[in-house]
Image: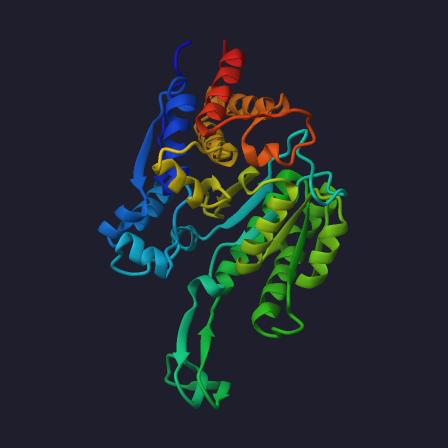
Length: 403
């Protein structure tokens, strides 16, 4: 068969550790034999980020603004141990956080459902899509260690020099303090992205904060969502037969555990980070969850919802066999290729993305899978494949479909 042509490149962001290994194999075995892959390559591996003082992350985000569609491998957000391991110049911020901030979008994460991998929560019958706000909160915080007694205040200085002060705490001993911020414009983009995505996918929207405790910060989120919904989306929601629902974050967690799914759960940045891992794990595996950053400006960035699989990488370096689940990384590529095909009016590329996803799911449903899925599947006598074997099994299934 002749390879499928691409007219516009994807922005490709390579990553770290075991997912970087999988990234290479996916391209070699599942993409390049079938598609004349056109990408603008950015190496977001930690070594190269260190070499460029993290400029490469900014360059990748700017390229995404220009070309609209990106696909990203999992990357390391360094801590103190990573600084020493990689001999870093500084403790660089999360590349995901940097990119999200620059693109001003919302992250939507949803589980990949396959027969034989049943959710831990038995009443979950449909996917729960997590919408995570992509800006601010703890990811853009300023922190300070308080060494001894003293006063900490929030100070706002207006452009005319007027000051407004609020006491944070009167310290009688050592402690820590943290300052966070957000922007009305970013919250508005978040709300519009959620409501628009809900209309596109015909799903209800649940939104949750803790406005009873955070009467200004969280309450601002609640007020902005309600205002935009009533002014811009309420009529369209009613025509579509879907609803918008607000509740406190703790009540939302309780309701989610009793629901059957099939809705978008919109969360602030940190809440979305935590709850997306909870939902994906309860549906079966962190490696079975898609993630797409959708910007109201028309930018899309696809990635896996999980990390770099550090433990497996160290085994791989020792020459030991690993059985690492590559499904979410494969679906990052298919999501990006499908969107590229949609924007470029290239149906062949869209169809290829569909077929690759179908082949991936078929391999699992026929009983061949990585170890993490074999441990939780309800299928009898699953065949456990190593990392490379699983990708090769998908290629074989894909070739049967295509040829």
